Length: 113
Image (cartoon, rainbow, N blue to C red; front, side):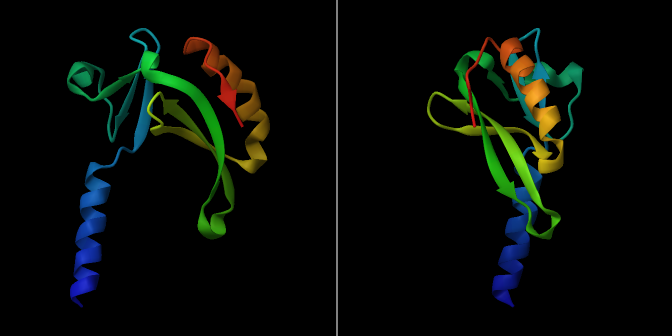
């Protein structure tokens, strides 16, 4: 019973502090990882500059019985992977259309698959 309580508390704390979305600001050249984005609070939010990103990478993600996804990550110079978005395998055509445009807007970043 004690372990179940610890797991539930850990999950609640983890879900409270993990980002839910990534917002691109192409004018300021920054990523914002947040639960809820509001432009008026953007200067107070934690942001990652495009200059700190080394490249974009795509990895296969498994989501239980719901199928496979392709996750797109921004990899920083120190190896940290910031999740940007995920696409189902059925929508790979959309990924291959939009990913080069995104990399170009971010300063011609290389993309690894």
